[in-house]
Image (cartoon, rainbow, N blue to C red):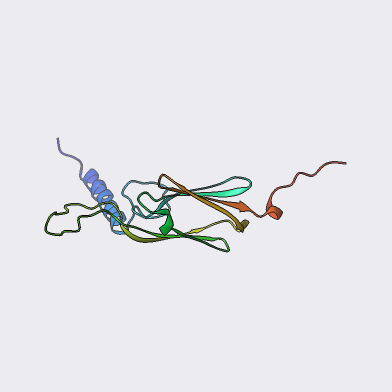
Length: 146
């Protein structure tokens, strides 16, 4: 009927740990996200033997407002997302606004072997896809046996 005193203390410590994670901007749920929940834009980052692939999820952002820059092995994404909110403050009341709006900047560190002169970016349906080729001298080469 009654829980053990030890179970109570374990639950208390778990709740305190979750509260500390929330205060530090981390998610309550354990995950492998390298950044705090709510970071915009969300990205997928991967690589092949010949390139590094980045997908940034930027729904509601006009592609013409996006600014992409490469400096050595740093990729910087900047832009702004505006929300369609009522302009007449007396006509509507906003009770909740969970979607991010405003300026954003995201800096991604890439491997040292990327070629900053071979970058291709496309934007479709709210997804910005960036492909950065690796430098040819760093690619694996097949050596023929003679």
